[in-house]
Image 1: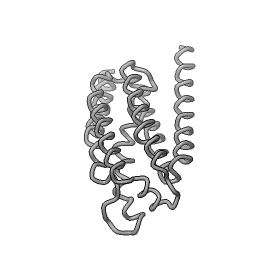
Image 2 (image 1 turned 120 degrees about the vertical axis):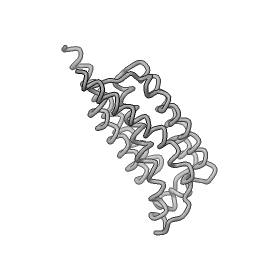
Image 3 (image 1 turned 30 degrees about the horizontal axis):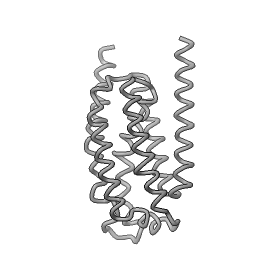
Length: 192
């Protein structure tokens, strides 16, 4: 029992440090608005994790396919952002010059590494894997929708802004994956 409490506290500490590091890195690399969006996703994922798989782990094989499909669709989305100069849109919206290198470092390199590491940790049934699942599902179902707010932040009208065509694409498997998580949690809790 003592090991479990130490392990749970360590997992919570690691996740909280991760949330802070993500916010700091996003702020330094791509600015306040993306840092705010990432913070919403990491903190939202934290609370989703605490309310679901932190206390009631599920069979990761039930959600791994939607999770991996979300990663694939996210990478397609990032490619659209790359082709349409998302860093320029961020610069226009925030007033902070965002370098293409910084955008690609975050969205095309670090992000996929985190998500794929999360898949491995999830399949190993670790608490960190379950946190990354929650974080990713919140990021894809809520944070990606910020693309539909960006036009209004840019000039007050609705128009295409880089990444908008594929922004909702990862939301589909992520939303389905979240549905599976909640359904599995409900089933487990009803049987206990």
